Image 1 (cartoon, rainbow, N blue to C red):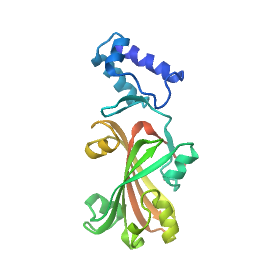
Image 2: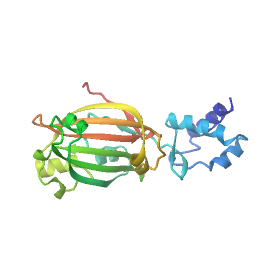
Image 3: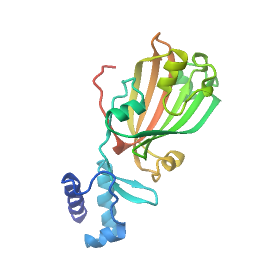
Image 4: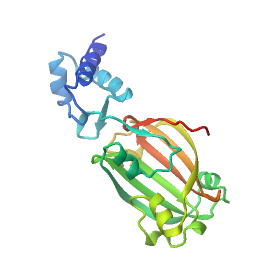
Length: 232
């Protein structure tokens, strides 16, 4: 089938290094013309390459070759900036919102508190090499971190917990599943609604065994490689 031949041709160029990570593909119309095919057939090929993590699409900007994924072990307590820098990447974080809210049923369940208990909610957008790759929402127990919003909550909560409160992450429980980006999450990641994603849910404990926070992470699925050597 033609869409498979197109897929193989683009794949070969990526594997040969002719198309490097971050490279923008020609517009769909020009690409379809170069393969003597229709845009419908071309999009089938591009969608398959996207599902395989070889390409990603940015809303109104077109198709790009996916860079190497970030190797990510959810059990590690290393913060995002340190993890990215250790792999030769340039991290950046943007604070989307920070407020005290009544815990939703899901947040209350994760934090093991009663529904509507007041908790901190922090939403951040994280970048790798200036590409937005993950939206992270943290729900945090205020009793462990009074006046948290007076400190740096944008770059690394791990560092702020340690430096301002003497609290150290010591254990993490996590779950991972595939999902799709929707609404505001897709918008922040420059994606179209329905784009494939990875969802990581983590519950974190301090050095004394206290459950201190949880985080919900919506990743561009091509941006990470989940790996873990720990037994949970």
